[in-house]
Amino acid sequence: MTRPVTLFTGQWADLPLAEVARLAAGWGYDGLELACWGDHFDVDAALADPGYCDGLRELLDRHGLRCFAIGAHLVGQAVCDPLDERHRAILPAEVWGDGDQDGVRARAAEWMGAAARAAARLGVRHVNGFTGSPIWHLLYSFPPNDYDEIEQGYEAVAEAWSPILDVFDAEGVRFALEVHPTEIAYDFVTTRRTLAALGNRPAFGLNLDPSHLVHQGVDPAAFALEFADRIYHVHVKDVRMRLDGRRSLLGSHLPFGDEARGWDFVSPGRGDVDFDSLFRALNRIGYAGPLSVEWEDSGMAREQGAREALEFVRRTEVTPAAAAFDDAMQRRNA
Image (cartoon, rainbow, N blue to C red):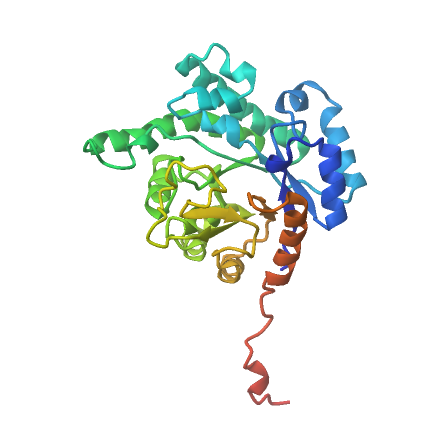
């Protein structure tokens, strides 16, 4: 099993796609996971301009690259979140509109359905992203939570996302939620509850990013094994833990890269994610999709990091054995 290694372009959206494609091809990547911001993938253009997707495919082909998924994280976050000015900063102006919360959420939901149609136009069968969450702010139960309200949060997500997933079904495209703090699903328990709330429909699966599990103390390999049939896409991202009795697991309201944080994202292979165990688990579940490098490291130049990350993945990937190692020791009759 040789899985393609791709680069998620979300952290490169300040560069034109043509430049990112040139760089990624030069480093040796097999493809790109196209972010739906910057000029990397324009959902509206894909639907309005018959030549847009053809031009995009031609660009990728010219560099020997493929696209297996698009990333629609920013708008997806607005579907179920309580909204504030932070959302305005990441949303397209036409989605934010006048900022009325119900209107923004409705436009975000409509846009996510459009993303499924645009992905299908491009020939891509997976849209990765976020759902948002109406209950993330209730993470710490003080004042004490009303747990009926927690259950209603899952019901609200299912109500908001079911019509979106109807569009995904109609287009033959699947949504992969990146399991992540701030989302409705961020660990084992919340993922089980989210899938159940949505009726375990196949249109809704998971983008497994190990970095977001490790800093919670959650095992990504065990996660892959439990949710084997829902692992639709995988990110390669690393995190380094620095819980030394002074630094906090909760991040201390400090920006990424601050030395006083208890954990931080680092280039793959430089942190605490056990990628060997994760890749072996992916082999066990038969995952043959891309390993998409989402490169984040506040202390390293991204050009160095992207090149190094690809080398790390190629070196660390585990090819499944064709036979048990002790087969050769057993006597075979002619």
